[in-house]
Length: 389
Length: 138
Image (cartoon, rainbow over all chains, first blue to last red; front, side, top):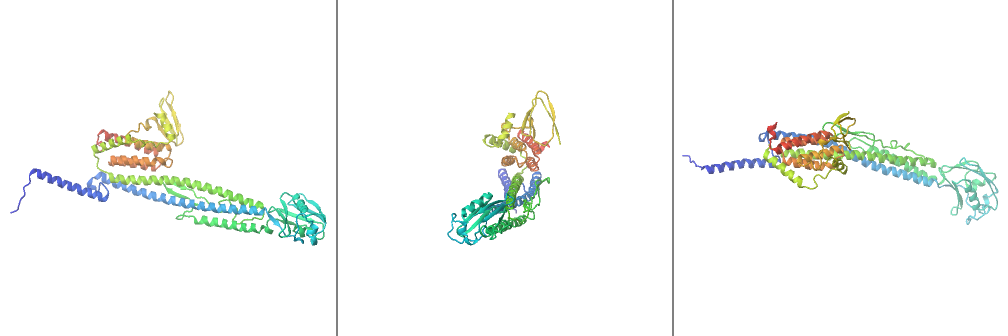
């Protein structure tokens, strides 16, 4: 005999409520475990498909965002490259500046040493350079300037000669070096000094330096050796610039070597093209990776080239940084949109008119009470909108 | 691509960054380049943007006035905050579809389109608040 349990109506109602609660409870825990309010097509057809649709779109945007992210990395790589290039070009410019500095002080010291080691400026040349001294007339021409002559006598002092030499040309300086006991001629690099004398003992060659009757070009010889080492360093830096440009690529795209970067910026396949620049030695406007610092004119043109290169680098950096900020704005908007889609997918429910209406009203009240929620119009926009009050 | 505009007597209109007010007679003219064009009836101000959907419209309107997604960068966080509030209060498929469509259009550089969709959101909000089931309406 089967035992039957008779339930009163009130107990039956309670049991039913309990069963319903159980169903609700299991649905809630399922939603909790998946993070979604609507879990299967059976739960509510419209929200389910709408949620799936939202998640699919979020996935599409994630693909888009990946592309933008790559472009941002490429731009950041290029930006770092430009920073390094700027340092190199600044280095090159400073080497050229140093060369310029050194070259203006190139001195010619191939003359003989004074026989008297304690000679000073007031010592007569005939006393100081006893063995090599001869009276006579010296003719000097600097570059293609005027040919000037002056006489040297037994009584002419070292200072007297220096004054005469310096009167020839403002670029020509002379000094008596009491350490080497030599008379030094100092001239701008690249200038040509031709010294001739009428004495058979070649006074000019022996005391002033150079070969009588032939031109001496300053800068490429003598103590210009510091200039040539600067020249070699400058060339090394230029070679390094070319190498650096070749090394600055991100996933095969080298914005500094003329590659363009095309990014899909939205779902409609609109693209943003970031134009690459060629920032190697030639692209930056240097004539070649080899330079010649023989004359100050040549050094000057290297300095001019380096200055122009710095301007090109600054322009490139500013153009890339504009592109970068555009992409970053888009990247963050896309991220927020993906979040919105995913949140939306999680929130979706069947429309419950009373609830949503009440919620919106509550939100409206909350927003009206909030003070700063709408204070995001810019100053310019506010002044425009004021005209519509 | 030119746009022909007809404006009523004394109507105000924003073209680019300029507010133009018509005189006594109605006028018609062409705008030759692509720029922000907002008619007086489509403009919300801080005071008139007094509901959740109207606030979203207002944010999109400011983005449209700024010109593009990049120029309106400072408005993005407010836009998403308002969107998220609306979505939480009214998570119906229709509302979420409209909200994400606004976002899509902003991303697709169609700010005018986003503004039009925002207007649909205002209409939808009105339906919900007035107590008509959006499902029955369709």
